Image (cartoon, rainbow, N blue to C red; front, side):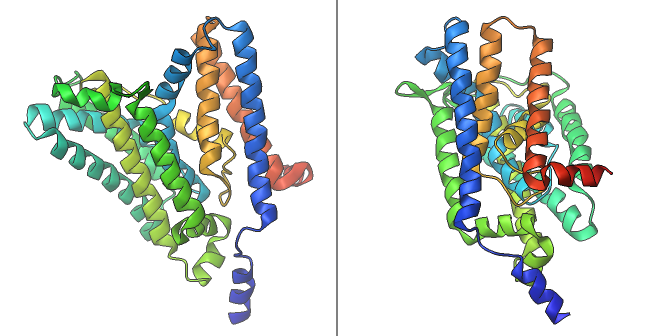
Length: 337
């Protein structure tokens, strides 16, 4: 038993320079593809290469990319959260209910809404750790539950109005830059530091790389998994608050399909569905790539249905490329056979 423990623990190692090079090699590759996409749209899409359009792209991607920060950590630990889109809608509805129907202070309503997101994430992590229920199943259930709650407490109609100053969060500017873009950048810098420079960040990678080795090395696996779900839930609730600020209403119909957009940004950014590999920088680039692609296709007047086909195809390609990097062509063929 001791020998087995030592063998497993030996598999749990810090990232070498080679590991970092592989991660940043993917980032450089995605940056190159993104640059090429920008050049192509600059040539063929009218009004694409303008400051106002680029700021609009950043603003449009901000809420998806904020949630994607948490989803990156969840997927690095080899888990998944499908509930974030419905949680955004529920957060918007709950904020409206507390602030407008119950006359809570907008600040108190915002704090309670973010706490609700944390409770949602905690429940997914708790059920995973205590009863071994796959997070795919639990979060799929919450996807339905939170959407239903959003409709129940609003009656299916938007709740308004919010206090006038509340609009700054979703629509305000700091100089020429939207406040939500500044907030997004600050969050990315903060969580980049957390993942790269702190023991918690190293534990996140350790859990996804080899959970048995992490346990034998004293990593609090259950706590790490629960924490990343709590963070993701709170970020989804924050996105719901920002969206409410932009719309100036608590709306139960928003954020349909956002969970897929969030996961797409993370996967395109190079995070492995198998766990143990990924980066915050890659996720930001992945979210930016999808936002630029969507914006360019809209400016070109491409059918919304064809846009879905294109984005879906890119996600499938990213997953295949990810699998090839992990297993190689021969390894994939062996698994299939």
